[in-house]
Length: 575
Image 1 (tube, one colour):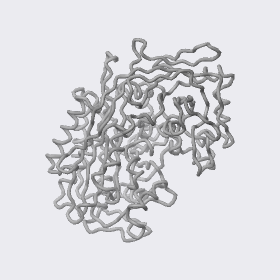
Image 2 (cartoon, one colour):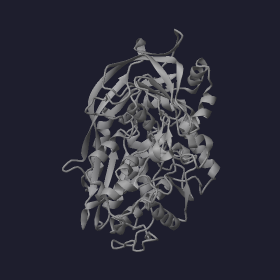
Image 3 (cartoon, rainbow, N blue to C red):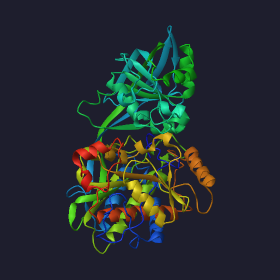
Image 4 (cartoon, one colour):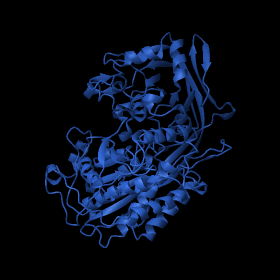
């Protein structure tokens, strides 16, 4: 899960697996334009066998031997070999021509804070306040240089750092920040006020994502972009910043060598931000309050920022892995399942346990992908459309593998019927509900509602829409090119325990194990609920692969226009 790097939902809302119950037969089609139907049987999906298979795959993928599955590492080599072996054993065809892999060109930049090779400080009236790497600031660059340096850059507080004409909002209005350092709040104004008329209220928009904020700062010519970390609006503690943005940082190779990015991107801790604002004669609380108004104007602070980052630089490549079950009648059209195989890798500085095993995040989702591939390969006859299984790389580095695939899709966007993304499975047993992430986006939600009823489950809505989980995992890049996507959490209403119990388990995972070496496989995990979710995924995917239906985006979705440009028109869709 990309915490932004991806915390996917409920496990902090970590996005789990989902599927939908019900396909009648290969000729079943959603003929009712107003009421999508899901079929009634799960076509022999074996939950018990799937549960055992999940345990087997997770145990292997999250083992120490795979070294945390970092891109461009020995761990990647082992992971890719394992995935290809599994796909071949199932008789599935390569997804990229005659290859199971798609090479993803990456540049790896690693800041070197040790031995005085990192310096960062604020200055006021010739008095410097040094910043400690890790505890006070985490900084990096996406420019392909072994050293970047910023000297006495003026600091401008730009509120939430948003330029959104549709909301009549521009935090950069009439402020030239070229060559300056912008200080930015995380999330968006609707979060603090919960005012439904301000952006989308408490639910985060893409404008609240850290990725957007760095991009927008660069578009305005900033030399450095610094986000103020606060656990509640960010959705994760400072420890996640420390683990996720230190060590090797990957970007897709770009023609300009990354020069379009700000020279320095960084987070500072909340306490550090409070000190900074105090030096400017302000308070963080008052600055946030001012930023909540559409009348807010960017404010120059009487301080400067300086930083020197020394980096090791390596051009490398990682791999997306994809296999396909070829359709019997329309092989050029495909239903797509996806999960990211990568995690954070190793940190030799952690002498007790240096391996970020990434068991829940995302060996569970990858295992689910393999389990679905096995279920589909066991069909007596292939469905009329193809079914593809995509394991992406570098999700933890900013959804890079899926971004590259979206730019270079093996199956064109207008031929991809829908995609289901799995990022963190249910390890707590069967649930009475299943949670939709990105409520009201597309027709797949309607199918999920109908299918969940066949498992005597209900559809619930994400409890923390302010964390913006819909924008935090690989399906987001496919949505941007118009492909309808389904992304869920496993639910919280435990059949064996209680909702409060599940929420406590999820919270404990975030505090103890999320993006930490403690995210390790536990043979005592109850994966029966994960198998139940996979049955949903399987049946709705089989239903779509066996039909002529084209699920579409709902009116008001920001992704509908992309589908309308190149994809099936309304007369061809389920709407």
